[in-house]
Image (cartoon, rainbow, N blue to C red):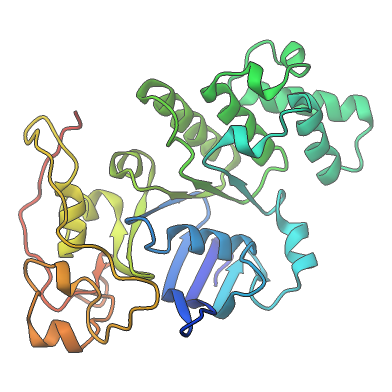
Length: 334
């Protein structure tokens, strides 16, 4: 792991105990994120996106059995104690939740909650200095009249403003890594665009790395330098976002893209079948039962494809025995 790499995950496996046996949530996941870059993590529900985010943050439940390595800056998250990892959250790494209203305390003012975060990470500041710091954090994310709004409660803010408060709280400690877990799901299109613009502006100002977890391919296309497509706890495609989302090589990635209506193809498409369950043991490609190309093929049923590029130096990697060779596609959002 070089000095410019903020996150390095290697061969990460997360397993939960189940009544009928172990339930793998992640299986051999590896990612690398340099300073200042953003990674989008996409996939259907249950693919392992949020588990990966929680593992990096050291927030997995105590019954999770983890192997492999996770390094954030110079700390091994897997090998460190919970107390040591707790000290990293807020300064080295931070999280923006999906639902800001659920993550904010409804009986405390917004100012009190931001001040609590400031005082925890900046014990050297006096109370007036901490208040100034909190007001500046709100201004930085585009909340006008911040000094007055410090006295208001979360329910007095719109959904978009609450999400900005959550971003301000996450960034007040100037973390090196921000993980945004579906931060715009409950927002309308206009507010979503504004919120993503705030995140992008803060990434540039602070020089931090960002992991965006989302099921929304258009969000990932807009804000990510690289993208990891997950299925059944594994990464099935990984590479530059502009390339993966315009020239997908895995049939699953292509199917995800085709399921998004566009002006050119204003139809509702879907992937047949259902994703495998966490306890399902599949010796081959987990997407094989739903794949239009690999379904029924012996190699796809019995041999798990490795995540590799077409050449040794190819940053665009795919885990597929029969990767797609397609012409670049141009998509226009509705």
